[in-house]
Amino acid sequence: MPSIHDNPAPPRADPRTALLRDPNFRWLTAGSALTMLGDQFTLIALPWLVLQMTGDTLVLGTVLALMSVPRALFILIGGALVDRHSPKQVLMLTKFINLVLLALLSGLVLTGTLTLWMVYGLSLAIGLSTAFSIPAGTSLMPHVVARAQLQAANGISLGLRQLTMFLGPLLAGLLIALFGDGGSSTAEARANATGIGIAFALDALSFGISAWTLAQVRTLAAATPAASPAAPQAVLASVAQGLVHFWRDAELRTCFLYWSAIALFIMGPIHIAVPVLASSTPALGAAAFGTMLGAHGAGTLAGMVASGMFPRLRVGSLGLTILVFDAIIGLLFIPMGMVSAVWQGAGLMLAIGLLGGFMQVRVFTWIQQRVPPALIGRAMGLFMFIFMGLAPISAAVTGWLMKSITLPQLFAASGGALVVLVALAFVLTPLRRVSDAPSTAR
Image (cartoon, rainbow, N blue to C red):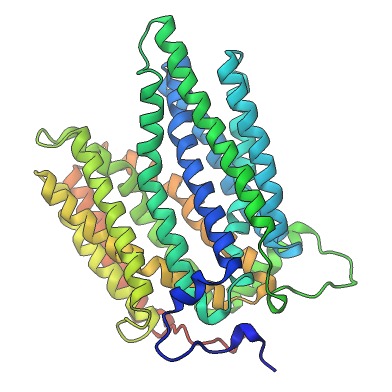
């Protein structure tokens, strides 16, 4: 007999309205939004801190690598542990760990006792923690809301995430600026350090509050696997089991391979070539770069909102919609290298963000609905690994290519490669037939 969570909503009822009346969803969403906002403070404050301490971009790169590399390496293991225990348990533990790490970092900054080796150690620990918090956070929603509400829930959650990515850096920059502008005098440097320390403290506070809100969340009994009396499987064996399952599912295998190619061909140019374009074009500059990124963020947010407002909007099947949207993104990417005015770059980035944001909600929902609950942590871990693990490789290749080709050639090659990839996927793979209807392969 279906549970109360599976009852259909009244006719013409807005699923978002029903979600906002669900206390579990409200607690989860409020805590997640607060944590994501706090994370933006650290993403701004940490690079600024390193540059204030050393002025060395190599040191900054090392700190960022200490955060990103362990995250990429251990995120699959994090997904396996999420499946072994529960997304809520793992996420709660990582919130307390991050609370301690950021409070310690804040205290060291405010007392003036922070050294570079401490920055290295804390950055490594934060990176390891996110390897477990990311699969836990992205796997929790199907354990909180009914299957029929997932798309609306993801639309709201991802939209809030995008909003925090827009507001967070502005608030963090304002906070640091209010306590000093990074001048060279001792008083100014101390004031600037105060702002950075407060930024870390606010992020730590966000983890503490969100841990409390998470404790109020009650997961659905139907989404929680029954405890097994058998001995728990080794973590690496559990990772391998998940990978084998995804490989045997033809549609999942096709999608994961397709997204891997997307990460390799597109993520590098977005992260590397766009800022180079802004800095090397006389009519652009730093302000134009910020405007283009802001336009992309606004487009992504609008796309996520549109995905929630028009849940059935697609071109044929879900897979065909993915291919059509990606082909359009590829075509929009080709002229980026010829941008000579801010409005041109902002317009292209707005359109790219709109299409990408729309599909991001659909893809998250499709994975969560297709994968069995016992494997969802590993599925989301693999999905996030594709973009977090392969993006640095793409960025490195992009930097190497830019030594021998021009920016217009790079953008044209990347956009053209995406269009060709879409065509090959359409002809040679079952991607165009992928549907978001319930899967029978379990």
